[in-house]
Picture 1 (cartoon, rainbow, N blue to C red):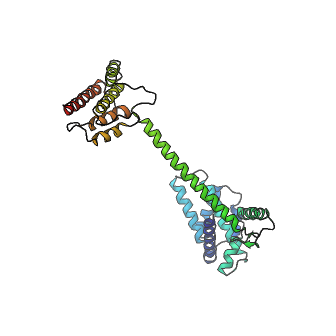
Picture 2: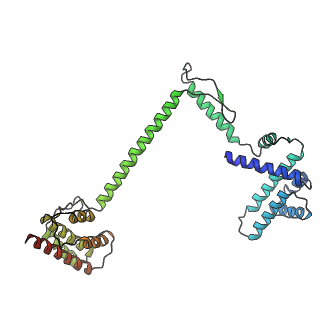
Picture 3: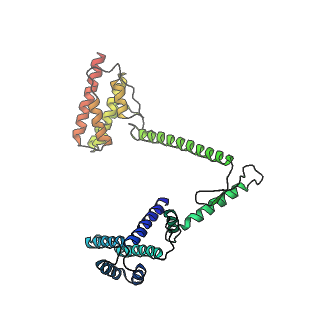
Length: 318
């Protein structure tokens, strides 16, 4: 907001300078002629004055800008009303400059323009008074406390009591505790999210019973007959993992994902040399988690992979 007010002051100074340098016509009479008329009629009057050279350079440029935008057609319904309001504000600045009350000193000129109702911020004084009142209430909690220091002026000139260092220590302490609490919350949420993701990708649900290899194979046959090819693929993949567990290649962990099992299988020192299980794991990931099902063709592929696992562990045992 402070930057906007500075920009307004700079803009007002440029308008006043241009008014003195290029002033032609009577801005007060022009402003009276514009007030009370519709935006369309106001623009017609401005175009007439523009053609006669009765507008200063900045107002003429403003009128040209409005005409250019209106000619383009890509403007909102209230565009002209907003622009005419800005033109009237520019004329008000010229009327104030015509009255002879402006100082020749640039610093004083800026102060006079800033004191105009156009650029006054009503919320600034209210905010300063509210802050001063809050600080007074804090100091009055303990009137005899040494932290009640003499009052000072803030940057806007409002009276601000100086609160003691104990209040700053409390504020920094609360800020530190809030930061620690946020970090703990963020870490817990991250760990909780990872646990949820891990549980969602677990090969077996927590309430799913333990089954042998033969039971998974029988279930795969039944599910395939029922047309549940995706579930049949899962049964065959679990049968492969259990066979590798029986051969002491890699322990089967029901809460782990397919990729965690593959990592332990490939890192196992007892893995058969001719065992390749990455392609089967990738295909299972696409079918079970990615829902990419091709029907009985998928089941047939996993029966071949199960036979490959079985032959590999048997050749290793021999």
